[in-house]
Length: 228
Image (cartoon, rainbow, N blue to C red):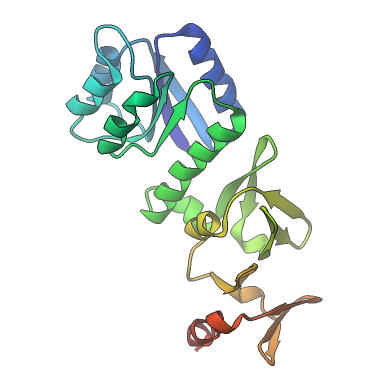
């Protein structure tokens, strides 16, 4: 679970964020603030994983808040002004949502946060037990132990379990950052597999259930080294 807050002074923008957050099981909205000063006071005594932060606010702007915070949570800037993007990324923000933004774009930003948290073990339950994947307009929870393999088809990835085929717009790079490397390995430009689901290997072809998956030439050495 990612605990988040909204720092935004426009009521309609707040409602949009609340609506999008409510559709993502991974996110838990703790509270909202109309200005950066109130949020700064709150963050001095409370731990939050993620800020959805507007830039242009009265009293205390988003950039002033970023400068004032000694320890920053993950930050997704939400702004109608693209000219602040460079300044924002100087503070290591995870993503920059330019208004108006779609739910799909919102999910992409949240996925970046999830991937960064997983890679740094801030939320180890995600890296060890399950992940959330965006598919269409939902975030779907998938237990890692259920994944057989991931197959790339065109612009999409298909995550295959024993009971389902889940399609997502994630790239291989993005999904590899979510999956623990000790359990999963890329064996082909179009395939990533769960090591413990391999039934047998013959002539550089991996068999998982009734599916035969070739090991690409550029992946052979690393694959067999991992098996040893």
